Length: 612
Image (tube, rainbow, N blue to C red; front, side, top):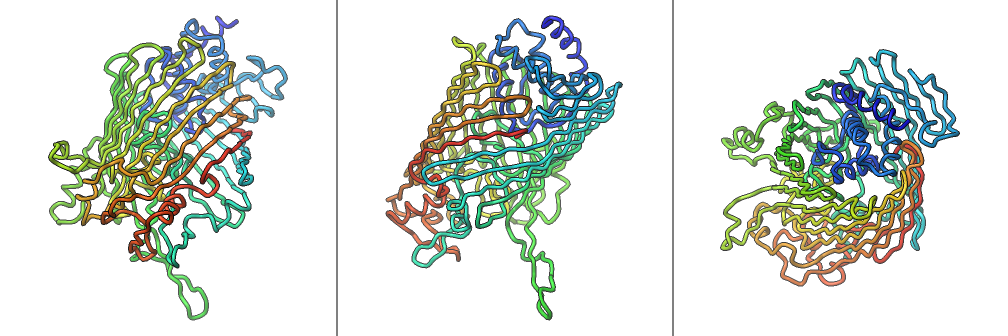
């Protein structure tokens, strides 16, 4: 039966490569990404581009079909995982899922096995026409996580729905809505939010910038916690050579296990026009133009409201902020891929047509548009990522982000350092113990990386860094062991050491002196974390999870003489307090760590979710 099943998949492989749904697979669906990574590291998949995510459902279907054609190389558990995921991508294979297969004996479903399937236990509705010109999937979204420690309990719940459609094998339309709520009486009320400011000597201190790897969102604060809704979706025209579309989805560029330093998907998803070209197996090109959220008030733009009789109130609008970026990916030989590209963050009144040119060096265009006026340039970046698999079961990778770079700064006589960030890492998987993976990652970002003297031009959206979540002048060490003993079960044990060093703002007048300071000099904040997580995918997109995390977040006060632009406490009017000792250490702790995770904590999390 299995041989017959695989033969069918191989026959379908050609159609999958030609046309299939061009819908992004959300990065939160971690288990399918983990499975593809495992198969690539084991040498079963040869054409995976890990430097550009999310993958589309078309790409994932291709990967699964390729794995099915190499059935003899898979372990028993991998075959079961493969059969399991193929049901979720049945429409991409021009079939209807049948959840009674592969060990699902008592599933409540209604299907005619050719055009539709309505399932209640694996809640979803799949439909396609007999000629495969129209396909549709509708799924509910529901979940809850409970966080508990000696400081109390926090509840996160979310619900919504997701719709995906594919028309005539050339047009994909998708959308989802997730309504989220966090509740916790003591540690999520307004008094603990950073934008209420801490008080020292009657002065309000600057906003906090929490250093964690949680995805950023725009919360609506309240006394019981925080709410937010997350609406994503898009429309895409596609063919065998690539696609063009408009979407709002999270984007990750740069190969990484924990957090990329190029585009980390840490900031809230932003609307963007996208272009992807895949004209041959060894080349891929990606480009987007995005509308970022500056969180900076434009004092010249406002609405006037009649607030009360004879009284008008002004409602100021945020300043415009945009981004254009491209990435070229080449796979010259079987086990090597490298990507490089550049981007620009700009804040013009309207979009600039020059930055809609996909294949361009944006810094050059920026100079053309602004240099003759003697005004400040926009904020441009250059980056690259290399992945090498020298042998089966081993992957080595590195990603480099150049915020600004001058060769003169490489001389020993020059005290200045380039504001750059780099990541190096490895993944050893599947040998000598099948199902066991060992990973390690080391990240460093130098002073002034991701920052800018003009706040509307910094490398952020919604005030969240688009690069590594630790920001500049920081270091992160991550090691992990993962074991997959049976289908759908993942056991992870990892250790993270995050360190933040001297904190500087980008002060244009003194930036030469700031980047001449010793990077990774004096610690201001550190967090050690040991986590064990068990995740079981009960059925398609239904996850049960248990997490036990110990962390120790603490802060330190630098003893060196303060440099102009160094953050040692700021008043609300922008003047420095120049705190020291315990007051300064407390300032950094409140700035970078939520109260719930300050100090030593043992936190337990349990959860169940349909979709993510």
